[in-house]
Image (cartoon, rainbow, N blue to C red; front, side, top):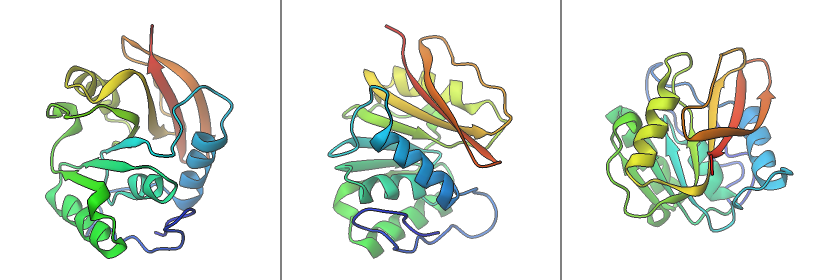
Length: 186
């Protein structure tokens, strides 16, 4: 995996050992970040944003956000081996001061010190984890009313926003993934 664009473009990301994670493909990441940067819907900008990469795996979404101008990324990953890989990737790229790695389950998030502008959720497909994570992240102060949430699901996976959230935009990225942009209902 490589960073697609921005200040870290072309940098190699190490992946955790084994097959317990499913990194977002380069093309799908490019689609997602083009939508975040150039999308024609109201969303917080990526420049200087505070970002959460939940169910982070190797951290490809969070590192792409850093490369494209995010001020800070918090990674949540409950598998310690993957969390250690994220820490190693941050050191290799020299961005440790802009990164926080929490070895926690996003469905049982700890209290946030500061809410994020953008939350990127990429859980294992088909396990119904997005509603659980959103409830926990909201309850623990990770999200504000104007935070943007982007959830990655399998292209053909059924998805209904949980109570308090609405779908703002949706886009399929290739044959495997679909990005759902969510916001709070007012």
